[in-house]
Image (tube, rainbow, N blue to C red; front, side):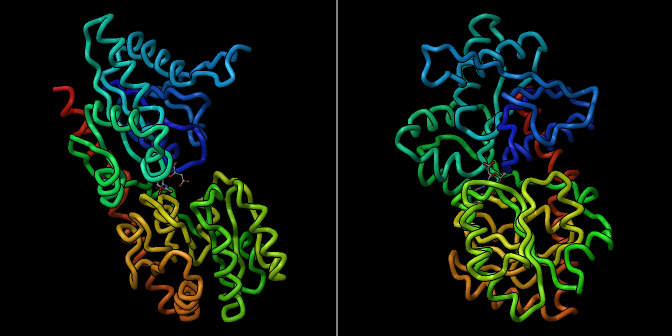
Length: 374
Ligand code: GMT
């Protein structure tokens, strides 16, 4: 198949998932065309089946806000026509679904070919941004106009039906992970640098947005640290990072917590970690938690959104209510202070991640694509 993929090219989960999907499809012999305003972060390797089309957004002095959606729709039309795409798969409804709708109409009018588009809902496009009255009518319209709609968890599917008058079926296709990539042996020298006295290593990775409640990670660590000799790695960057650094200093924990910034080789970092902490107020799925599990790292997360569909309490990790740092710390201490228990959690986390392996999920997308080409 010849597939066009539209996504945000950033470190965010939807962009990462869309990029990994495109790479996996290309490995299976499909021709994949990424259409984005910048090269996606995880798209560094060369593959003869992968094409990248940058969306040019001219910035005329007349425009206070350059019309990205129009530039995207026009680029989509160009790529669909010149590369004879069979379908488009857009990730994150805003503004990708409405741009895809416009592109489909333009192509239909000029060539009489109807090129289907599938919209994958990822989370904040529905739960935060999409619900906003400013966008809601367009979001509802373009989701309903999609030929296929998918959501990354049952929770997100339900949330979408709750807040938008969607008339079509939304198919749940979970996030996936390449287990082989994340199943790495720890590099001893690296572990020694981070935890010279054999301390346990806790880790958090995100874009440090408000929804991630990153300061809760520091608060949880402050309670775990006196009970379990430990270090904390904070991976990623974003608006809440300064508050975290300030809180770490306030607690006198600045030497126990390392802020590593954005990292691409997450598998190396997970390989030396013992517990992934995710205190988000909402996660449609929690791709970062799944990637940690694929590296045999148990997860201490909230029970918000789709997280309980990924992290199974008492097996792959533990769940706590949003903001309950007391309970989170208690559960974290219980996991980390018992070697046998920790080993079991690590094994279970890895085993459960295998259910979400890329080889299990890609065929579901392929079948979905095929159903629109018949
Ligand atoms: O979590 C983020 O801040 C990034 C966000 C995005 O929109 O790129 O991730 C969302 O999509 C991921 C892939 O489907 C999910 O695993 C994340 O849970 C989801 N984030 C939220 O729902 C907050």
